[in-house]
Length: 594
Image (cartoon, rainbow, N blue to C red; front, side):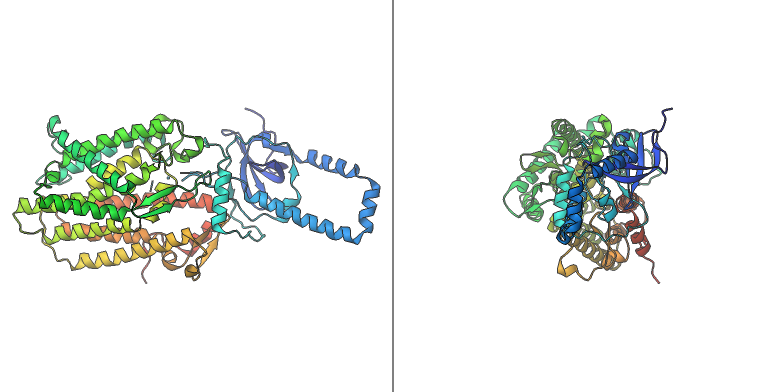
């Protein structure tokens, strides 16, 4: 076992990552596995440093005394005689402190990303005391190749935070992050490398299961496994052609010069990518095209009768796209890779996604798949199911249950596309690489599992009194939209005068945590609204079977997982400020009613 050079409790000089400055630190411990020392600075910042970035404090003190002795006596006497020199020296110290603050503001730290997340985001604790500045010592520049874990201790520092405009802080931090190494180690999500194998097999199998269940006369979960059709019934060339035409139509609508050209959040290089946010235009044209197809005699009930074949074709396209994305990422610059999907394991990186924003020229593949083929396809499939119900049940119009499911889910999608710019601040766009997880989720999971209510109602009609569902939808949508609008406005411009009434908790990253408005009631009011809406469009299916309640059950599991992920990430990122936030806003998703 190798000997430990620096002992716990020893005072040493530690180099600040990414700079040539050394500060007085205290050794807290040594990890034999990572071979990193955990040290704490005077302002309370904790870091993990390699041994080569630590020096004995005695060596620095000796050097400092020798420099003092080398100064000429005459020079020292002239300083003491001149009152003006005292002022200039004091001014010089102030300037040095300001300069040191500027250096410290740009010092890097590492993090990962929080709907399924992560790019390198750089933040620094501005709570740096004047004593820490005075103890800085310059040394020879070294290449920063280690991994550093910056975290705040629970006790706050005494110094006041440096006030910086959020827009300037984000762009400045993003530029500093470009110099950070691209192969920083981060925790692996979803069960790590073994979990990646599991999810690659389970997700397609689950979609197959629910599609086959929905076609049964009695779609009970006790009928497991459902009877498998012959292999030839999984494939239909016409279904593949239909899916390709649909994707090409959405791609054409995406590149047309209609709608706003929006800027994304700053990347690690400081660059802001531009996105054509014309999703509302795309769904409007798609709806007109579907109406024209019905008018011209096109039988859209083909979608219902070939639901399995369409799912198979879309799955094939998602696999081919994922393979292309992985190969494309091998030629990407290190700064273009997502931190969370760059583990070095081929299977895990294929699943999670290596490249953050893969593009073909200005065509952003992740943004396109996130908002277009699957999301608008969800509405098209619901419409086709309404037509199939009329045909199968010999109705002149869809049932009330089918109408409500279509309208509720259409409202949800249209709202997302109308506020499409808000997606640019989400975890998927900011942090997650684009690989099989998102490609399969966007193209297969959303359109073929979120439509289960409409798919179920085709063969299992349910009489309905719509008042309860309508009330729940109104309440859920109001909470969902108001809370999301408040969050997105605050993220875009925290100093907006319209948001001045909101209370916040400042953090060491330079950002603030909302503790009033909707975000002062529960920590995730948008999740609460989402759950109420999910309940509203599950109720029209009745309680005869569990299958149409799949979305509600899945969504609860998803939100619990995401809440747990958010909690651990925010606690690591915000430290004691997050603990204070949790004490202030006690309830996670469901508020207590008194």
